[in-house]
Image (cartoon, rainbow, N blue to C red):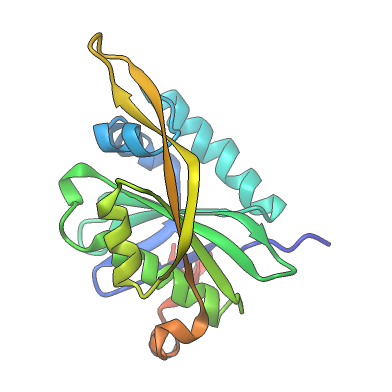
Length: 212
């Protein structure tokens, strides 16, 4: 039987991570049309509100129900404004391992939201879901994403040469593919030095039904 992630909300000092919903469509579409998102992800460009609705209504539920992954909206606790997205993909329930990635809206960058959301997700995975390994992959030139990996305690395991396709703007304004390397990072339960237990004890994990 395929294991699946629960509908979960995760609270931190400044953020709430919860399932994406219909109200997120405008902000999600705006965030995904950012230049940095276009450069470092495979999100289609331009990204429409229709694409956001499909992600929320079809893609995210299918990923969760199949056990492959989980998509969480990252919102400010006080304003409930969408500041980003955390994704879990390529989940292996036998090995208890998954790949984590994150996107932050342009206006919210520089506030430490990506590392706060990623760390909270890791703590939940290790304490509540009993995972044993989280993997991150960052493009060789994506220093901002690498800094997040370092901040949450990830260990660099090596380089996958020529394994990443990034994107650059051409003279006519369209996007072109460019190959680069992937840096592979890992995070294990012992890398968090007990931080996960502290969040769990504070009641930081709740079912989405209870939070909503």
